Length: 505
Image 1 (cartoon, rainbow, N blue to C red):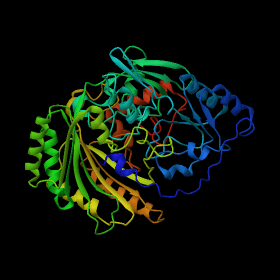
Image 2: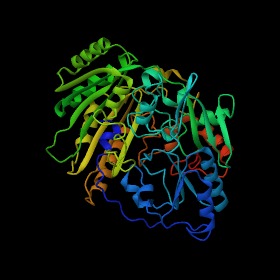
Image 3: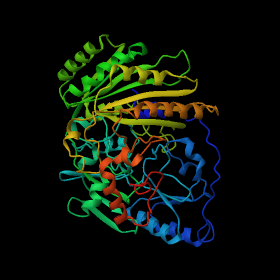
Image 4: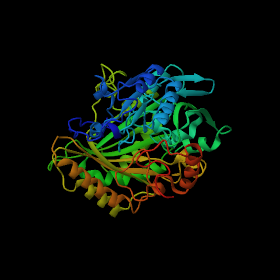
């Protein structure tokens, strides 16, 4: 089963260039007293460039960013660890980046300063009617840890994405139509601010910060060390996957879009057109997959309707009624793996999921189905100028439902009229130095098609080029986000390439 990340993460062979960025000298270099004092204050670990584990510690999901050499990586295990790192960085004039799952496509979770890594803050605790989860809890581990509690939480379609980025960016996925976006279920958050204080943000305490954390994006206002969320009621899930040939791509897209809008909110679905190698002559697969949070008999009827709309039976079809954990594990592409194996290689001895290389993607929201002419253009963009060694993916998810019952200004997540998110992505799968330029051209062609009819962009799926990103990500909510930023982080301590306040608006 191919998911957004599963189909984009396969190419670990791309060789990143060496970095010209040098480390910052603090306290007389890496052996200096300042760094040693920080190391002694941490319950977790501080990794410096002189340490044997540094090369692995600096890695993100994407090998492209191996070229960046942080001054240090701090593996924080407690809120106090995070506070100590923030205070240290401010005192010593060291810039910081915040990292949870390391899936920031544009490398926002690394930089030449101190990387504050929260992957070890990965708790999952049921307390009464809510669940407390750590910012570094990978989706596959959330499934496993909560499987015996009768509670589960909203996640996306990738097994190794963490709440630190997923929830703060909004949190869309196959549960969106049934349960809403992830951040709509946030009850409170424990946040380390830029001055080192730990505060609780909720509807009644720090309400402006609480509003901003629900869709305002990670790495902007502080470092969340605990999310308290309302769990979802999903004891079972019917997983399905239907596959057609490339020659039927237009019929499948034209059938799937109105079908997904008209379906019960129990249905969460995605459509993918996928080629691992886009060499001329290779044939892409066209896949409609997802989960149904209701009786299998209802899904059977819905899938019969989809087949009728397409007009051709799929080449392959899988429908499996099981537990929520089984269904989501299938969505993650890990049905044949253990929980320990379903992690990025190198993070534990059993992990087998490969890293990605040089990736570019463009995603936009849409309030309506594509016209026939738009589908023709979309497929033409996807098929144009194929290159051997280049992965290509067209990925669309159905949205709407419960998520669109929330007013656009109720939280920072503004996209409350979207029915779909649609994207085109490409990755260099070979160490061919000409491939990154081809990947960039594909992304530029994708943006040129998607921008005119699109109604905005998702901060968690950031395009490398994006006109008016504040408006695309946040719409009418951006001015308020800037005000919240100035209140809680007036010195712009937390920042990245598109952090709140770094552009006019």
